[in-house]
Length: 220
Image 1 (cartoon, rainbow, N blue to C red):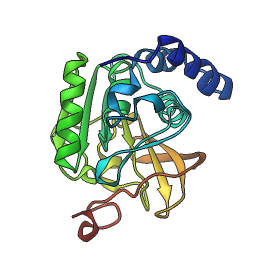
Image 2: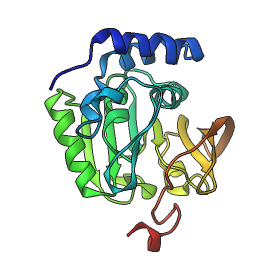
Image 3: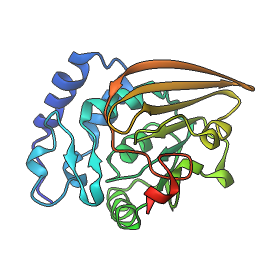
């Protein structure tokens, strides 16, 4: 694949991320290493480092780089962390997470997207990512608990299954919560049986479909 100049990626990191308040050097470094053009549809590679979301098939999107950075920074990842991602999509966010955590477990309800993302991530050498096709609102119980969970679609509320799969000693869940068209990005931190919630910023994501999202009947 013909790769846009690394200068474009560096410019994206400096102008779209650092200049807009992203402070985590590890997040900035990861965003500067992942080639976003690999995760865009054919003919859309020229949009790789613009400050915009890009449509995918199946009604999904690749989030704008700034939102990927905001959500990743909000997870407060450490190198030994095990992370659950709900909504693999193109795999771009997955690739960023895999550079920051020990293991990434990613769940996608659309088989076509899951298989395409897995192929790309394998080609790029991301060996610490595990894939599952299924209802991400239910998490991945067999692999719980997780140090961090990221939801990449808008939910009516934080799914209780995901909260229950957080590590009890400070597990973090970052999820857009609101209606089907506008949400607030929320970080929930677990301390035993207590869950502290922080509002981070307004955002707009595709709806989270599933048993603990916008309804199983809509998820088909």
